[in-house]
Image 1 (spheres, chains in turn orange, cyan):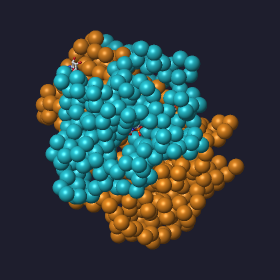
Image 2 (cartoon, chains in turn blue, green):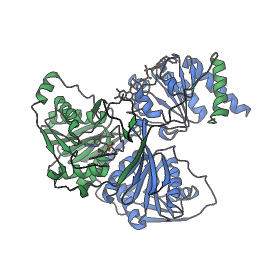
Image 3 (cartoon, chains in turn red, cyan):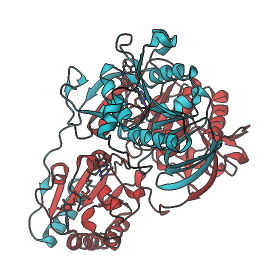
Length: 326
Length: 257
Ligand SMILES: Cc1cc2nc3c(=O)[nH]c(=O)nc-3n(C[C@H](O)[C@H](O)[C@H](O)COP(=O)(O)OP(=O)(O)OC[C@H]3O[C@@H](n4cnc5c(N)ncnc54)[C@H](O)[C@@H]3O)c2cc1C
Ligand SMILES: Cc1cc2nc3c(=O)[nH]c(=O)nc-3n(C[C@H](O)[C@H](O)[C@H](O)COP(=O)(O)OP(=O)(O)OC[C@H]3O[C@@H](n4cnc5c(N)ncnc54)[C@H](O)[C@@H]3O)c2cc1C
C-alpha cells in the first residue's frame, strides 16, 4: 500500500545536509510508490533548497516560513513542523539523527503521541511493515524494531543509508506556508563557533583521528593535511582532547561523536573501548600505531606499525601522487 | 528549589555484550549509573547547595536499580524514588517510560528536572525532550553550563561542537553533556548517610496508570551482534612500503579512494 512520507530536511551554513538526502532515499523506500514530501523551515529564501530536495528525489516540497525560524529553537521548529504535518497528514516522518533531529523529534513525537525509532542505520520490508535496525550498547549490538501503533517516525544516522543520485531534470511543486510561531521559551543569545566550516565530522566520508600520540596542537597539522587531501575531517580521542591538543568538538567515542565514515584512519590511538564505541561501525578502519600489541589493531582492516609522524606525511604524499597519476 | 534527577541504570561501559535467548545477557554484568546521569546528579547537588531545596532522584525500572539510587544518595541527593514496573509490565519503550514519569511529575512540582543527554544502552535520547513536552515545560539539551538567578536560567549547550548560549526560565528540563562537571565519588560518610535516606517505591497503580495507558508504540523483534570483524592485515616492510601497500589496498581492495 502506498504511503505519504514527510522528510524533514535541514541546512547548515547555507547548505542542505547530506543526511537530508539520505532521509529522502529512505522516505522513497517507505512510501512504496506514494508521495515523498520534503519540508524545510526558516525565515525565508528556501526555494533553492526546495529545488535541490526535489533533485534528490522528493516529489514535492513544503517550506515553512516565519522570521522566528531564523535559528533553531525546539518551540519554534516544532510549531513549524506541526503545521506542515497537520496540512499533509503523512503516514511516516523521516529526519536525520543530527543535533536538531535529536532535539526536536522526541518533542514532536510526544506531542503527536506516537512512537519514534531513533538513530536508524537500515530499513527493510518485513511481514508487519518496515523493520528498522539501530545500534544499541554503543554499537556493540543492534536491534530490529517495528512500529506497533500510529505513525512511522524515525531518525537516521548520517552516512548509513545511501542517498539517491541527484537528477537535475526532476521538477516538482514547491509551496510555502506562513506558520504562526508563538511563545518561544528558550532564547538563543549567542553561538560561539568552535568547529571549522569545512567537513562536518558526523557526515564526513573520511576521518583522520589523532590520539595522545599526536603530542601537541601542532601535531595535528600533518593529520589535517591528510584529511584535506582525502576531502575528510579530523577527529580525536578523548586523551587528545583532555590534553588540550584539540577542541572537545573533535572527540569521537562514547562521550563524544558517533561516526560511521567510509574510511577511518586512527593515528596513535590505543583503541580503548570507549573510543571504539564511537567509530567501530566505520566501513574501513586503518590504524597507525607504534605498538604492535595495541588493541586498535584488533578492529582495524589494515594496520601499520610505526611512527605517525613518519607515516602520515608519507601517506599524504602517496595519495597526492596517486591522484596526479590517475 | 524542587530539583529532580532522572536516572537510568545501565551496563558498565567496559562490559562485553553477548546474547542469550534473544536478549542481552545480563547474568553477572556490572551495572552503573548511566554516565550522563552522573553529571545530572552532580549538577543537581551543586544547584541545591547554591539555591537550597531538595534533590530527588527518580528511576523507572526494577528492584535492582536500588543500588544505583543508593549511590546517588551517597553522592549527596536527598531522596530517591523507584517506580518499579517488575510486576506490572512485560514490555516498554520510550513512550512507556515517559508516560510513567509524566504521571509521577503531575503529582509533584518540579522547578528543574535534570536528565542525561542519552542513555548508553538503548540510546535514543528521547526521554528528556519527550517528558518536557508532556509536562509543558521548556527543555534545553546537551548542556555544559548552567546558572540560575531568580527565575532566569542561563545555559551553555554543546551543539555538534559549537557553543550555544541560551536563556530560559523555570520550571525547566535540561539534559546533561560531558563537560558540565566532574561527578564526585561517594564519600564514606556519604555512603553511611545514604542508608538512612528515603527510598520510596511506587508501582504504576500508585500513579493511577493502567497497563493500557503505557502500552508501547514500538517493539523490538530481534537483537543481534555485529558480525565479528576479521582480524585485519598488518602491513609489512618499512614505512614507505607500508604506505604504498596501504594506498593500493584502499584503492583496489576496499575501494574507498
Ligand atoms: C566514562 C568514560 C568515557 C570515555 N569516553 C571516551 C570517548 O568518548 N572517546 C575516547 O576516545 N575516549 C574516551 N574515554 C577514554 C578512554 O578510556 C581512553 O583513555 C582514551 O580513548 C585513550 O586515548 P588514546 O588512545 O589517544 O591514548 P592512549 O591510550 O594513551 O594511546 C596512545 C597510543 O598511541 C601510541 N603511540 C604513541 N606514540 C606514537 C607514535 N609516535 N606513533 C604511533 N603511535 C604512537 C601508543 O602506542 C598508544 O597505543 C572514556 C573513558 C571513560 C571512563
Ligand atoms: C517493562 C519494561 C520493559 C522495557 N523494555 C524495553 C526494551 O526492550 N527496549 C527499550 O528500548 N526500552 C525498553 N523499556 C524502556 C526503557 O527502560 C527506557 O526507559 C527507555 O527505552 C528509554 O531508554 P533510552 O536508553 O532510549 O533512554 P534515553 O532517552 O537515551 O535516556 C536519556 C535520559 O533519560 C532518562 N531516562 C531514560 N530512561 C529512564 C528510566 N527508565 N528511568 C528514569 N530516567 C530515565 C535518563 O536521565 C537518561 O540519561 C522498557 C520499559 C519497561 C517499563
